[in-house]
Image 1 (cartoon, rainbow, N blue to C red):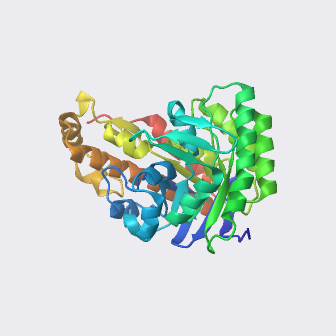
Image 2 (spheres, rainbow, N blue to C red):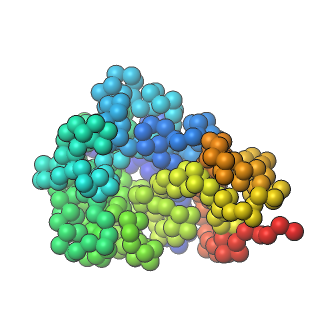
Length: 377
């Protein structure tokens, strides 16, 4: 596999990085947050709203898409971008997260993973080679190696077994990726749970194999934030400066802000849309729970200074009514507002790193969250 450098590190401010990632479907400005379209769609949000909110890249899920509608069908229909209507860059995960989340429906061996479909019970085999084949059928701009992710807390023996297996799968994934079209990328995934030495061993082994980018996986799976940040601190310094760094499945705005401070470039999480469906809005004043009765008579918008119309143009009372009434519009509006806030945060981070003011931006942003939502006058 020829490793072309499609990532340009434009500036550093401390460990925080500003970069540009070139893909076949466009340029990704980093740090970047990738909204998650598990089955080729965002729940309750149109692609144009994702784009208008400022997202450069989105994520699709290999396991779910290969079950339905199927990788070969997507390929016949022109690839994932044409099939979904999203005309920008797309990263697909490898199915490794489902090795953890569907633990009752799978069996792991040296060869790969055998799943029992959660849809119809059909047996599905996913090896490192098949995971790469599926992602190439999708036409993914960025493909991920197959790995085994373990939920924390776990024993050191189980963490090390999964990490060593993931390294062997990384080698097979890289070989399977040989001959991929120009510009398409393969990322390796650092595992090692909450054990510093294993994180370092995994990172070094992946660097020795050689990938277009590197992800840190197996975090935000049950451990405290301080453990997650410590593991980033073990792995990130060992990864090449000229390759993008992706923290998988993370996370909250605070998680992302702290991870950027430790050299992370890319993030994904279902939090903005999932929490939106449950009535939670992310704002510069922290999280606002629109299910609370105190919002029922509040005529104020969520944030009169927001750049997103939904946060400015609807009263809290109306949003509260929609959520309490179970109206789909409530979940849609809050999901859009949350995606827009996450993108606004990334934009602010990029501007701050570019201007050499990340430390003060970080301090102001955290102070705003800590101040909390202002009561009505």
